[in-house]
Image (tube, rainbow, N blue to C red; front, side):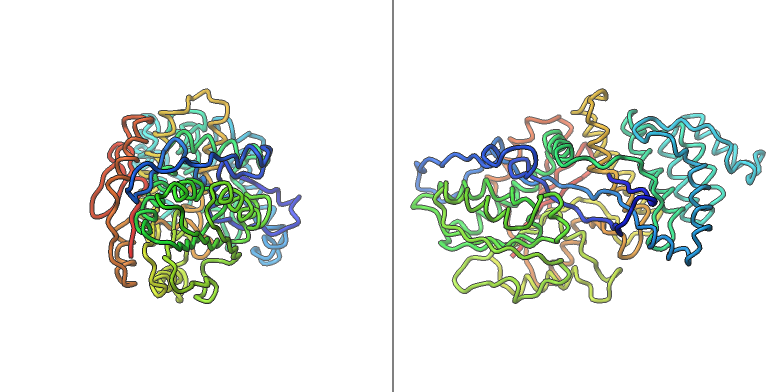
Length: 508
């Protein structure tokens, strides 16, 4: 997660939506030759038209949370009505509470009586709070603190934040690490004014190579992204297995790595490969992760398709999902259309944010194109329209499982684990807790809600492939046995112990 000193900033920064990165397609320190080396597939030896996927060869895009960035001095000045002195006073108060000289990569170990003078230390409520802290019950303490924030009891919330700080640590147990970021989310929420979010995360901006290494490490440590892209590719391959012309619309292509294994699989089709056309939709802000425009993705995929002898066409479209119109997509008669929506729809504003309800409008637009299949992969969390306290509870449950799963793979003393969690997850957590309205771009919904939206748009479920399901189960054998894969209600769920984390399904 990136912070930007107000005093040094000359640009206005905003939250960036989730980006997907791919270790095979990353335009960083690795040469293009090594990034895009492929093996021409051998001819198929059977008459089946099913497509084969190998989890060992699967190298999809990585799901990248936004860097946490902040407004320019001009914007913050406007947020405070032009009163720069008031802004500096407010920043001084906050910095006094948090400790400006403390490196965020170290444990919070702040001993302060800040705020205690405003609370009756002999009250039953305060004794209960002290007992929670004395027991080290961080989860309960976070919930009590979030409740105070939800009730706008800033005195109590400020006191609890100072009391909970010694219990959190970005290098401790999973709940301590998560608690550090959730506490920062509460601080940012208390300290926000309009578009101004307090610069509470003190992480330095990584270089491109560093960021790539963090994303690759998370990709290898947890199967969530492999699961999502593998299941989506399987559904598309199954729905188009008898088609000679395939058109894929990817609503957030980022690096394009999801399509490497699909192109390779299409090349191995009995009787020869079909022609493939990809329409790549991408917000201009994703160029940051790529190091350039969509032409980079097109050139790499074209090179791969040529090596695999797959007839290929690439069309790049730099536009926000909210601005997509039918004429942008250039759907042609006679081609089998597949639409890919992986880890992207939760960024679309719905009726709770925008009267135009772009989330449902986009689904109706997709349905009007008569696609053979639409794939949906999303985090299984209910934080979109939930009131703040319930949103906090859901985020605590969801990310507790996520941090536990990371802990099972990455040792505590791994030199990059802290950076992985800061740059891949912390910004998402803070956005969920600290932001409202259009500023809150992390708006996850559970599958039941997505099913309702798809059904209202006229879709019906597309059956999942038993072969792909078996392939994913084989993939999970390489991970901790606490991961679980479950098929129910026409969808696949990947979870950690008893908590669903990612769902994947297909529609037509």
